[in-house]
Image (tube, rainbow, N blue to C red):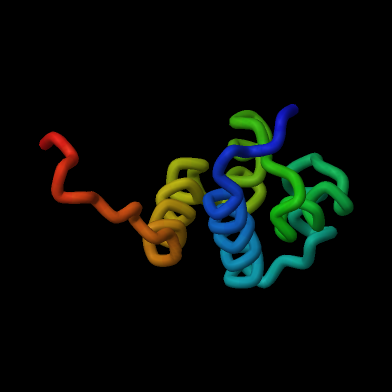
Length: 94
């Protein structure tokens, strides 16, 4: 899989997965077992070095007992808080 064109969103998703895991009181090993994934993959995802496919994100949600859509919404909130919107010039058409 190609690297994301938006590394800030990948980092936001990584932070959301890690925060949800910590809130649930799970170790990476616990989440890996509950999601039927390898612990090193969880580690790489939480570091933002791997980006999950939709099916993997769904499995992580199952392991955390939250819908994948909740993980994505949380990542979007984190991304919006850190992303800087490009400045618009006065000559941009509206």
